[in-house]
Amino acid sequence: MAQGKRQLKLDELPDLLTVREVAEILRVSPLTIKRWGKRGKLPAIRINSRGDRRYRKEAVLWVLGMQGKAE
Image 1 (tube, rainbow, N blue to C red):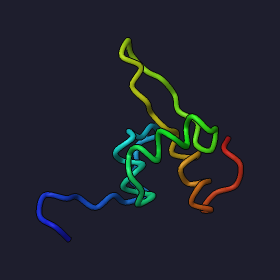
Image 2 (cartoon, helix red, strand yellow):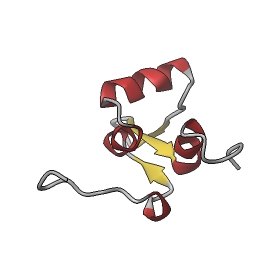
Image 3 (cartoon, one colour):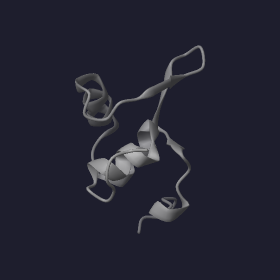
Image 4 (cartoon, helix red, strand yellow):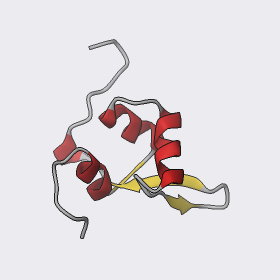
């Protein structure tokens, strides 16, 4: 593992994930995550006045095929 990079453990993930965290989990670029959000593949929740994106952990696990329908 490269220095300075932390390993994300699926069982320790918060309920809402950032674009960067989701990109790291799914091993794609942050831009891909944003595109998937626009296409409805991975819907984002917009928070604060800047409109930052957050993604539900259940939705990310569903994309990975590790969980049934999101609750």
